[in-house]
Length: 567
Image (cartoon, rainbow, N blue to C red; front, side, top):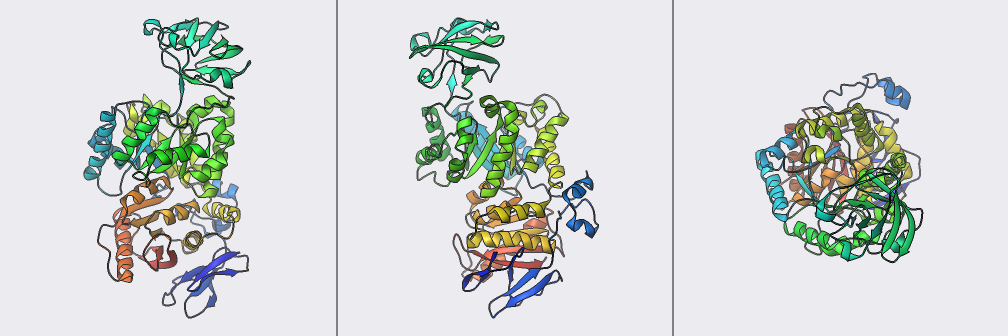
């Protein structure tokens, strides 16, 4: 069942059909792919004749491939996608090697959409310089707006300071003591190591594992001696050092959602106008609420991207997904907290759930890590990036590759090229059908129109969907249904434009002219602007078919009109 839109509101059409499209009575279709279904004085409805599987970079021009099986589709893939426009977003971490306006502008030209600041490192003065340089880069390389993200350090457990701050070698099967007693905070050694998590003796038990330095050293708990002391045995040889991260795989911890540093960092972000927060080590929906409370009224428009990095986050993902704006599958710490082979299934599961909910999802960590020091990636890394996109990731992220790497431009270019190749392997129509079948009904008016626009784009072989939006919600919903063409977002709200970089296929443009008194004239002016910008960036040319979404009146939540037209 689908809902047709007409002047009186929603009308349930009790027929199994792919899409029901509304177009103005005055509009003349230039395609025979629609059958007239019903008309009245307000609207004309058209019923598509057949399902298709197609992409804008189809592996074959043979129309018989329109209904090909998935295996046949993949067997016909063209490794050169030609004019295919990359739709996957790219997030890049800015570090000392890339923190200047010219370099950031160059990274944007190579394909960067979102700048990430890692608040595990650096002073406020440094991060302010990143924000300033990111904004200056928009003057150097104008066009689509750039988004700025603050990545919190998050609640964590660390070792204390060793005596004289030296590294102590630890042999395998070495027994030693871990303590939370503050008198050992600055004098740890190879026999006794301080940990800064006071409740560790309450949550851990005999036989559990403790990882130090991202799992470089692994210890088994032999005994919980008292409320401050653990007896442990090393499982492998290594070195124990000052201030290294500690993980407790398989143990539920009761750390606060935000440390005092995190709270101060969020306030800094609010004061300096960041657009989104990457929230580390989220374990429950209440953690998201805590972050919103700290952001407060002044930061109410900052979007929250939860980072799933531990078993608790995986276990509570459904409630977290409902509370958040977007998701990041942060595979680094996640691969320590749970067995590494399980990360494969967890990645696919979390991405799929995010896709079904229509919330943007990022895949991150070690995607092109070898390019930190090498000009070319490993073949496994390229496959990893491509398969994350095939899984359904809206964005992929670079960390050290752009923060401290020797080849930041190569890394961004490689990621962009890999995304273009991967995107042509997607059977978009099948994805659309899966999403429509799996989405609970009835949907909102806006989502119904969004889904219908994607179906219309398939049927008309549209080269773009142009969305007039106030909040960014409509383009996000269009992105949910994964059209086979770019989504051109036109908005007067710069913040909404920046956040939509997280949604696959959305290309935001800010319309700066004042609102016309006549809403129809204002609508046409914005549509013309969207077409002009799309042509400028090479998305459209004369004679292309487009689908447009607009509202009949101003404000948020009024996207209720769909049109098909020719450029």
